[in-house]
Length: 343
Image 1 (cartoon, one colour):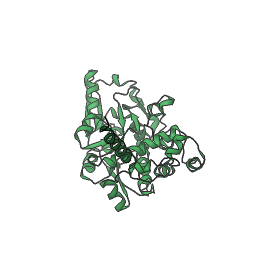
Image 2: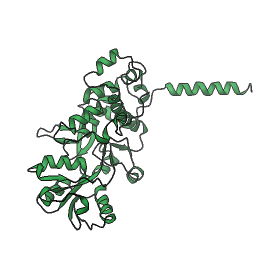
Image 3: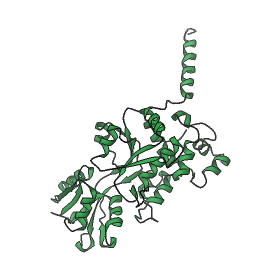
Image 4: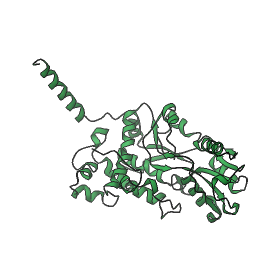
């Protein structure tokens, strides 16, 4: 009994020291700091998520995730190099080290998580696969498309989902497959296919961007799959995985506690809410545990706003995409956005 006390005391002290120790930076963060730039893989052009304007300025929900991470680790949300990637290129680019993070409306699935050497860091948009058809076709339901040709991009979960849906409903849908989404949408709008299929958010983006008259195309009501979209990082660097994951969680929790791009400095100086004080670094230094400084989340929020602001600015009801919050609302407002606590 008496011999066990020193051992127990030593264990407690060791645990306390470990808990208080700052995290190691990790090789990915070291490389990012050395080059002074985060390299972010994005879509080649999907309005609302990642698209470049004529001057080469990128915008979108996926783009803002990378800007937030850059602000947290480099102090400047502008220090991001965006690398446009096709569906076929995206995982190879991440595996090979060409990019630090993949933020390209990518569905989180078991097979990708377990076999591609990547870790998904969370869900930034809950989506589902749908179909778009011309209004003049008078198709009102995907189950009315028996024998129809459907334009679809290869190398995605979309193609397999459509095959499963067709088989389950005995529709005999005929896929017309293209490597690039631009080729698939071009074929649809030229009349080569009866329908085009991808995630519902992508359908809204394509309709708004590429249709001569968006009102001539309708997105059918059925969602035939679950598509939790989120960023991914390469396996083998737990420190970088943890940083990227907690920046996204911090953006979601900041919305829950009303911390915005406009008020974050004021709240940092005046709020007595324990959660707000932790997120802004006013009380506990949570950044130290990630290998960052205590202002990491303040910089991220100042760069792009909280999750709700990112959603509304890029894809929300006041944008051309006009997407409702729906299941992407906060958990306490009927949605699925629920972040583990920053504490």
